[in-house]
Image (tube, rainbow, N blue to C red; front, side, top):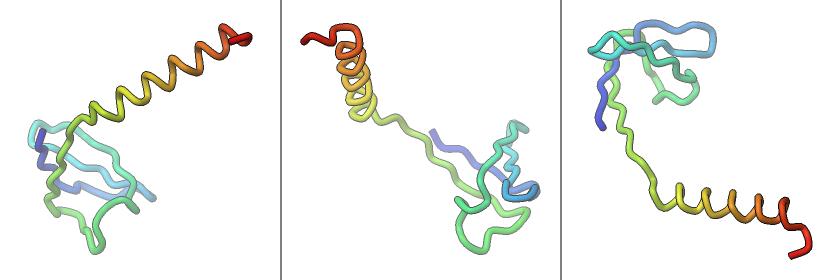
Length: 72
């Protein structure tokens, strides 16, 4: 998914980004590219990571199994 957002304003250490659908995204100011200013347009790419999701599920199952079956 590709989203374009405009930096509307900065509030303390946060940036308020506005999408073309008028949704607001609050983003840490220190996670923006250097020299970012109000009015600048940003490209945001979002994708899933199925491999890490599966690893996290397996780890959660392992931990629950250890908690629920401490003798094994």
